[in-house]
Amino acid sequence: MVTFAPRKSLFDISNESSTSNEFRGFFTLFWISLFLFTVRTYIRSIETNGYPLDFEFASMFSRDAITLAISDAVLVLNTALCVPFAKAIAKGWIRYYWFGVVLQHLWQTAVLAMAITWTFNRQWPWVQSGFLTLHSFTMIMKMHSYLSTNGQLAYTHEQAEKVLAELKEATEAEGGWDAALRKAEEVMMQQDSPIPQGTPDVPNNAPEGSTTSYIDARTAVTLRQRLAARNAAGNGKADGSATSAAAVKTTGTRVLPPGATAVPTHPPTPSEILAHHPSEKIARLARAHAELESELTGPVEGKVRWPANVTMRDFAWYQLTPTLVYELEYPRTERIRPLYVFEKTVAFGGTFALLYTIVETFIIPLTPTKEQSFARSLLDLALPFMMAYLLLFYIIFECICNAFAELSYFADRQFYDDWFSRKWNRPVHTFLLRHVYASTMSSYKLTKQSAMFVTFLVSAAAHELVMAIVTQKIRCIAQIPLIAVGRIPAIRRNKLMGNIVFWLGLYAGFPLLCVAYCAY
Image (cartoon, rainbow, N blue to C red):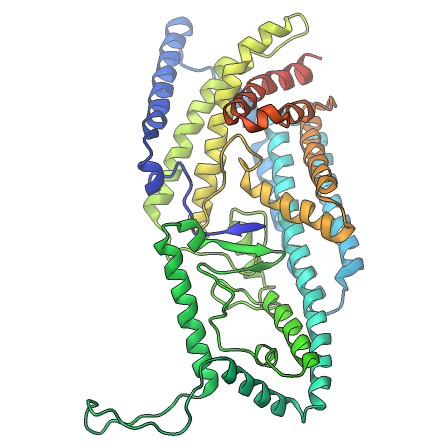
């Protein structure tokens, strides 16, 4: 189950729940302490070397910057080919299952292969190689989600047309389409409280000249549906659960809007009306058609229906949105706040300065060698790598993702959850959940355990490929031992022990990777 909702990130200063947390002071203490430590580092460097930083790292990651920028622009522009591909699928020129699927995967593989080949040919340092490789993976995941979602919608549309043809044929036995609709409406009225017909009497207290009338049956049903849905949403808010009231749930390509219930809030479609027909065959076909049609409509506002979403403008908006899972609609904010974007930009610059200082002062000079003992390398690099990881995490998921979310009106800012679960990186987690885990279970009928293993295998292979491209070495350092330890029943039952195992794994993991790929 993939969820989208209008939510704020935990570190956002405008998040009321975070600002009221009694441990919020530790967050402030962290930044003050890190700032004082950085100033102390600069002063000691000036006293020893005559300058705060020698900018060796800057000269390394700025090398061939123009070529890198052009290469990245070509990578991003290449993804625009998704739109004509999706249009060809929508028009029936390409059948997505399975010719389109094969073409899609061949194209994605070619994009990744060209990015890797170009990276090796340029002989870039690890910063440029890592950036282009990771951005290539990001673009490929976005392409995959966009094409697979639109391909599935094309298949759903085809099935809906077949069911509609069967439904029209079935109504012929009941006197035709209009006659079947009238009979189904009569059943609907009997199921609800009866709607009087004709002209009611004018109340005694009504103003002079007033007239009265009963609304038609279909309008009455619609008004009742809207009232029921609004009451259900109000009850959800009254319970104090903002997440449950605002959650946007999706299975496959379907998204339910905030406060959604089983009761639709739109005028009933012919299929929804025919679902009440006394004929079991007509009702069954109508329900099937209504369900298929619901998949093709964006339900957050209900303004987008496939294939109207297959446009260059929609795709560009999706590219700007910080998510790897494509939907017809997302929960949106009402406006862009310039001060918010400025705040995240300043936070990005300040945090990057701290990250740069740690990398240049405490990581690069202590790069392990074969002559240095493993224990010494572990002690020297454990804390600097952990600090660099936390700062990089903050830059990506708090500064960059929130800034792009603001610019794209994207309301769901929950880009991370707790750091001792698989959801610390929600964009990748949601992608793997839908397009690997759920997809393998539905397409290949795998069990949950098998699908989980395949998902882990794909994730581990992607991580290993990134490390192989950056370092040009293959070490196959996977996360299997840590995961096995975390699944020990005694540790799974004890949250404190699970958290300790997680943090110890991170503290040891980064130096281990550095030693494995740099020293040997």
